[in-house]
Image 1 (cartoon, rainbow, N blue to C red):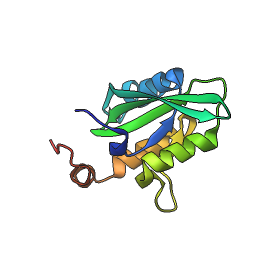
Image 2 (image 1 turned 180 degrees about the horizontal axis):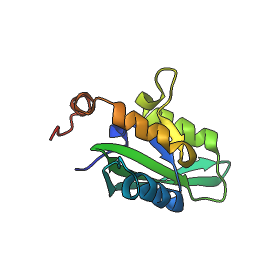
Image 3 (image 1 turned 45 degrees about the vertical axis):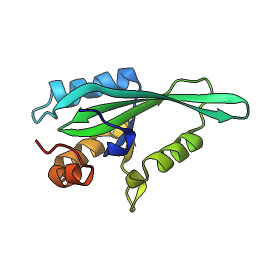
Image 4 (image 1 turned 120 degrees about the vertical axis):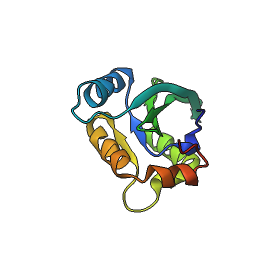
Length: 132
């Protein structure tokens, strides 16, 4: 299934090594593994900052049947405030309430608990996604 950034239920900052480590830990070597389908969609984003470009890559993967966006900066200049503003504009539903649905690789367990506890059917209906 094709996903867009607006479909995701969580944002995770993780470079390719961190993402492969998370895949191994939570999918391959876990007693209660999450289903992980990688390589669904990717996007390169470039933001202009004082004549320079802030570039980051977004990969949308499917974890336990719901899309999760993994992202990491690739440019020499990284302005995390601008990147966060970009995500707040593109996926405002992840920034509602007192607990944002964003994390880094070190705290990825928060994403896993969120996905395991969420009502996936309700999420899929809300986002016009296939239920089965």
